[in-house]
Length: 419
Image (tube, rainbow, N blue to C red; front, side):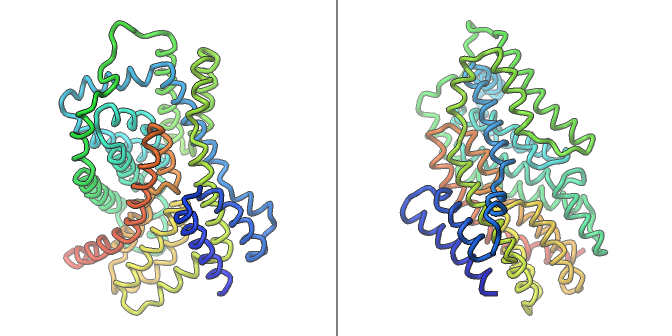
């Protein structure tokens, strides 16, 4: 009991210290994770270091490098000009467009696949005068909405656990709840950040339209083909039930572009957001130590022993959101859905309502800069926008830890009583 609580206390202390001292969180978190892992959890150092998310490093580096080349050679500017020309005087529809795009790709097997739209959506938002925070929230909402389709990972995990426990849950009910919840969040985001579009639009916006005299060069055509190939590879992998590795695929296409345009490739190396990689890597490494110590299970078991069923459901969803903000949402769903089954099958609270709430609450926090989705969205934004985005997305993500359970659980429980 003492060891998990001590590790949680150290985690919080490191987080607060980094904030107060205004130092890089990853620089403090990674050595702290190693110290706690070795001296508190009794883990070999190689096992602690092995918890560093290499797959995330490959994802962020591969995607930002590939699209960095496309930006350096002017391809992204031309795509942005084309999109803005079609949207015309209605840039306010862009968040809904990218919500739908991200949701559609996310529904095709892997939620993380929806991130392929981020490197295009973020620059388009900036050029259209849309707050990049709003576009990031729109893309994340789309990913979370599509992730609970019957053909996507979150939906498969949640529905599978519910079915195995004998809980009456339709996969389409799960998808509907996720879509409604995330559309509501998108509308809130528009209300909070949509007003800034008019202020941003007062300043001259570079590349609002494509310069017709530049035309399309071979590098532009090849870049567009590679972008289409990246999206197509994700869809094909989903069709055949293969987990797509977007980072590796992006590196492969980047290598092809490097051979064609070495000059743009050299410029793109500077666009890789190593700062975000280090920050998220340190956080996830520490969370891995916490999971090894059983800190997550400790919190979950304590929640199930709360007397009031509604309060117990809120606490379980709160724990799911808190841990998921720093770790794998899929892993959290796989761990916590079974733990919520006794409460879901008790008859005091509708089982389908608890599972739906748990899934949504665990996913909407993925906009946090400490998660793969949030980190990728920040890395896809312009460099001067990243500090503000980190701050605001962290606030939004952490607020969702509490807002999701407190708002969604009572609503779903109330709805269940009329069905």
